[in-house]
Structures are given as C-alpha cells and as structure tokens.
Length: 289
Image 1: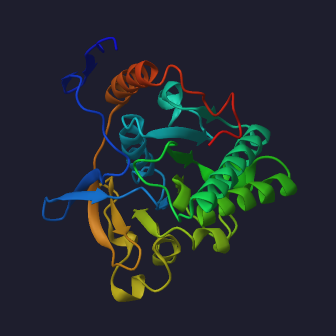
Image 2: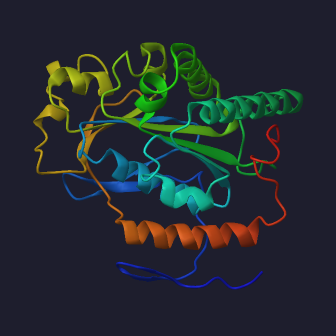
Image 3: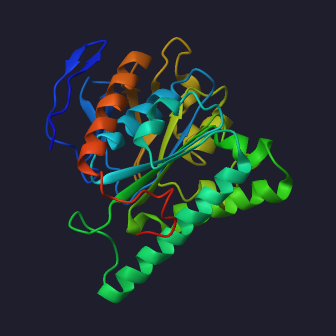
C-alpha cells in the first residue's frame, strides 16, 4: 500500500490516520450545553428540512464527509443543484445531478442490489448485515429532493422517483442502505406522507412557521413547545434533532467550508483508490451486492 499524502485544510494539514467506520456514531455538532452530539447512521435514515440558509446542506456535507472516510461504506449522491455534493463525486460510486432519467436508473439499480442482498441474508438465515459481512453499507445522500420529486420531468417520472425512494427507505436499512435526504419543506406535495413518515431520524433547521416545523419533526411537537420557528435566522446550523421514539434536542451542527470539503474529499478519494482498486463499483456492476 502506497503512503497517502497529507491534505491541507483551512484548519491545517490532515494527517493520515485509521479509517472511520459507518458502524460508529457520527459527530454532527454540539447541544445547547456544548456537549458533542453523535448520530448513528447504520440501519437508519435521516430527513433534513428547513428554510434556505438554515444549514441543511452543512449537515448533509458533514455526514457525507464522514461516510467518505469510511472504507466500510460506499457513496451514492444525487444533487439537483450539483454543487452542494459535487465536491464528493470522485469519492462516490455514482453521482447524479439535475437529470431525472439518470436518477431513476440509479435508484432502480440500488433497488436490485437491495433485493440481491436480502436473498443473501435469507440464505444465511439472518435479518441484517454486520461489520463482518463481505459487502459494505451504502449512504444514499440526496440534496434538493424536491427537484426530483416535484419539479423536473413529468408526473409519471416524479411518482416513480418517490416510489423507488420509498422502497429504499422502507426496506434498505437492514441491508446497509442508508438514505439521507434534504429539502426545504418536506410537505406532501414534495415528499409523499407515506415516504416522509418512514424517516425515523429528522433534523429541522429554522422554519418560517410552526406548521413547517411539524412537517419535518412530526405532528404535534410545536404544541409541546418544540418548534424550529423559534430558532433565530441569525443562527444558521442550529436546529432540532429528533431520534426514533425520542424527543427533539437543540443542536448546533458542525460546518465544513469549501476548502475543507475539497481537502477531505481529495484525501478520501486517494484512500479509497488505494484500498479498493480491485473492487467493482456500482456504476459498472449494477446488480452487485
């Protein structure tokens, strides 16, 4: 194995270290007492919502950066704007920008892979993957989900996108498919309720009203005093994080600037190229497990 170069960031050089694992919790920021907040991603899905400038993409980039540094995880990226997740495209097995046909083809391939993995688990008489499995987890990160589900293409294509994504969120967790989706307001015209309700973990950045906050966190939290409408517009990155079966907590998410993202992406790309040079990628073997 060739030694990896030192990547430079806004905070100084990043020295090579032990790879991270997607089976460990991810540091996403601090709570109101300054204590670290960590989110487990494996066997879970996360929905991120909030008004423009609330910090949705910042949180998404933190999670993608962590996944990029995990050799036991592979990346699938869809970005309607291209630039929010574009820096990570060289670390990813697949990257789709504002192209609904390519997005549908990609989700269909992931669905096939998911079915193959379930067939494998059935033969092994098991219910979910473990860190010792021969195949790795996938993080499917989607920014500006509204572009694919409500803006581009025709009605049939948008409905197909929502249906495929719903299947991945509903069935993918046990076989290591982790969906992280970000949008401004995940109302029923953007994300069907049957899909939105499947996300057990949710993050609500600042919202313009209590109703929008409840759409992200779940119905009734505003009446209990938990509303992202109370977050100051001068406090980007602050939001309410809720876990499956839990209560919201106020979190200030970490932030990676463009230079730092580029440096981490370059380092992660080199690390992955060195460690997985002989491993097939999803784009060339669509049905591989």
